[in-house]
Image (cartoon, rainbow, N blue to C red; front, top):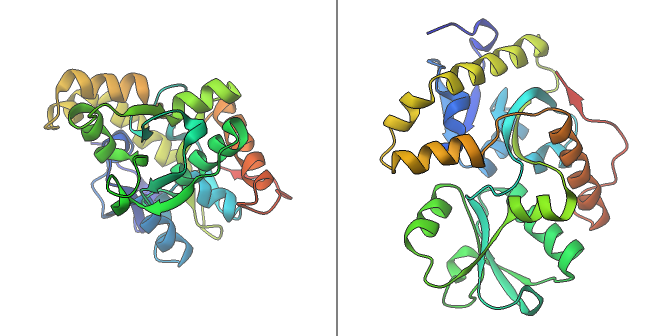
Length: 259
C-alpha cells in the first residue's frame, strides 16, 4: 500500500456509505466516519481539516477549497438518492426528509420548485409512512429500500431527474479542505491518488460487502462517478444558481476555489 504523506497528521472525515469506499479504501491513517451533515458540522467547527462533505456546504460556505478531480457524483441515475412517493408529483403535499445530507434535501426542493412547481410541507423522516406517503431516502438505507421495501412506491431518482432537467452531472460530495490548510495542492493530489488506488482495488471492496456482488459492481461502476472535472463543475455552478434563486443560499459573488 502506497503512502500519502500530505495526509499524515490531518484530521480526516468521510461518510459511512458504500459509495465513499473507493475514495478512502487505501488510507490506513485515522478517519472519522459520520453522516454527511455531521461531517459538515465538524468541518465548520474546526474539528476536521479535510472531509468528504455535501456539496451544499461548499456552496453555503464558499471559503473552503475543493479537491479537483475527485468526489461522489453521478451523470444520470444515482440509485441511492431518491424520492419514494405515490401519485403524481403535482399532487405532492408533504415529504419526509432524511436530514443526513443537506445536499440531497436541497436538491429535492430545487427540482420540485424549479421544474415541477411544487412546494410540499417538509416533515421529519419519522413521519413516513404514517403521516405522509412520500420520503427522501439516501445512502445505504435507500439501497435497502429499493431492493426490499418498495411496496408499490414510485421512485424519483434525483440524479436521473437532475440530468433530465439540466443535462448536467450532479456532485453530491466533494472533498473540502479547510481554507487555511497548508499545502492544499499536495493534499488534493493525495486525495486523487487515493481515489486511483481505490478504483484499482474495486474487487477487494466488492468482495468485502455483504450485498450481492453483481449489484455492488454495477452501483460503483455505473451509477456512481468519482470524478470532479469540467462537467461536474458546471453541475455545481447550476446547483449554486438554483439554490440562490430559491433563497437557500446567498447569491454567488466569488468563484469556488479548487486545488
